[in-house]
Length: 506
Image (tube, rainbow, N blue to C red; front, top):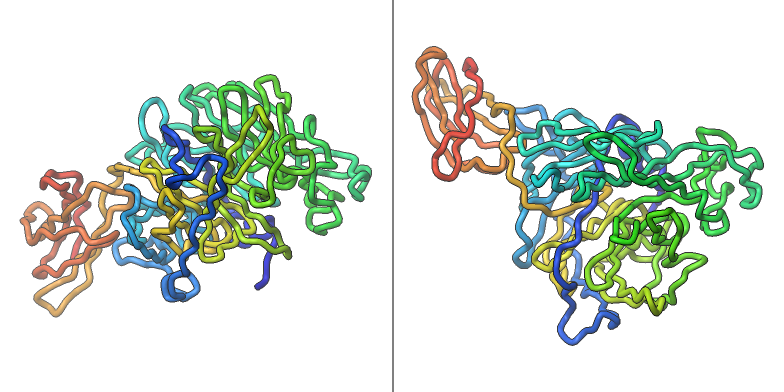
């Protein structure tokens, strides 16, 4: 199997054009559920059931979904399920196939497709000013990171806020997390001059530094600003400029990336920062000092072999002393199987033990990926460059999986989401046998539609009910008697009117 670098993967998957989206799942409240009889320090390897047959995933070569009522398209996501999943919809950012921002139901049918064609990663639901919102990052991919802004949309999909990094920087695609105080956590990758000779690179070289910022959403004021190069030594990096001619540090266009910060999680005592290229999670206090390092060349913790991680993403503090992450565990040309990794971390004793390893079907995501804690005790693992997402029961048993999520997906989530778009439903008509016509209707992003009322008539002012049909998937079609004009009404579960489409000539 040919493996490509993360930098080339993002560019080749379509993120070199405008777009991408970011965020991270919040830890659920309560104690971490562990299998019966297991303590937090007891290693528990999740069962790995046999993968589903090839016909259920992207390997089957299923064509992208297309529709009659709209020009929007989406990858054909396939889903298998063995047990009841957590409630909610699946939020993904497929790369390279149709919509780059995609919400689907539990059967893989689209609910919302990002309508502008912007690239999207880490599409998810967060809370802003006490209300649920849809958040993402949008911008341009540059050398494995991004330059753009964070976007917040309400339940009508109207833009509530656009959040930029402070100090003249561009927000990076790796993190856009909202806090309960109305702030956002962001990362940025400014290009700076640096002496890279200690790593075998040019003395007058170029590198990507990494900045971690907390910014007030409403005002743009800077709350916290941290620069990786002031606290992380080059010697901690597992990369060298000579590893990749496209990132050798000889020019701004080939800037070296020694740290690659890809997640930030706020704790009461500071910030948990993940640096992929040092294999380390750093606890940074409010003054910017590094309190401790977990993993990597200078780890302050004793980590047994079964809990070791590498090239990780999405490091999060969880209740009960658990730190979770997506352990990519291998990079281009190396070996290893990726995991959703839960570590029991004793910060006083400086030890870390394996609590749970979530793995299934030999998934290997050499880039991207995440772990979400769901409210019912389940876990959702997005496999990143391996375009799938698996839901696990509390004991680590794989119970459901979505495959064919484009060419890869930065992170994947399950969220409860209720939305009524400010746009109108879309309709189209295909002539039938002369006495009938086929009506097609959809409403991108609508979650509350239970049925469609089709209205027909001889002119736009004289429309009457022709049929009421149950909503079926993203697009519903129905045959009605031929007429000159057609419109539809969206009905909720109690037959209440949600919206009316435009009237079109049939």
